[in-house]
Length: 350
Image 1 (cartoon, rainbow, N blue to C red):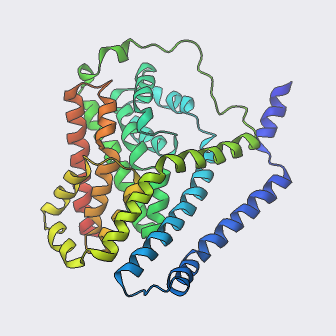
Image 2 (image 1 turned 180 degrees about the vertical axis):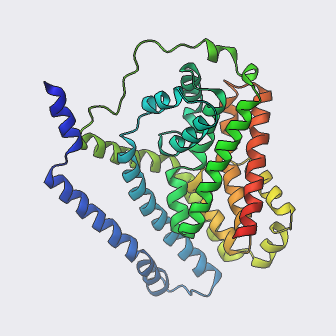
Image 3 (image 1 turned 180 degrees about the horizontal axis):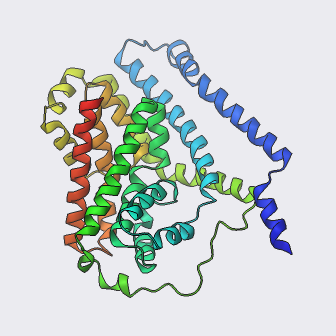
């Protein structure tokens, strides 16, 4: 008898809760709109820095971008987490389990964008999916899409470059995840997965953790996720914005253009530089914005970003626990080729 009441509570929202959320949304929008004039006044009028000097431009870039990105992350992470509370990892795994390759790769890439996932959960997610019978290629499409096209990357791209660039990035990232997963699946590389993965068995019925959540639960999850993600990425965010501010203020545009826009090799160099780095979208996007402002083609800087978030060395080290070296090499080769192709394509169309 309690199930209908629980389901009703999870769907309906109390009027007072609606009013509080509406007030929070209005407050967020006002703060976002006041961000630029506020820092113009603080940096140029109160602090007395000149907007035409390198120091003034760098300081303004740092404080304005830090506030803007923090507001974007806070708002979008909260909304996405609440929406994502209706789609659990257990449900995702069940949806992918019966899919054949091709259709499964498309579904996996789409679900990878909206399902909670980070580098630290790469190994348990991989084991859980394979143990549940999800094909290897479909699982890899999910693992590629999750860090590459996530809510942080989407919201920051939208805030920094607008919806056209954001849509191109989403399309490029999804295509890489789908095609790379499909190709790796067709190569039948299961022999290069550590044997214990296939020996793992899921016992009992998996309980869907999204069932029975009330709106209070979902809102609490949103607040907790905002705090958790901001605590994890804040150092990378500040370092990325600081580097962007330094380049914005002191590195000459001609130097960047001469050394990083080297024709056909520019995208290759960008991807090669991105793979060893360890960062995420929040940390690398301020640097991407500045490099583009200094003259790098959009395709080159986005390929750099993709290589950082999709092929970072720490994630490869984590995946080594479940994948043999040969499969990791194939993974990097296929995904890296997709990133290169996407970078060149973006340079042609943007």
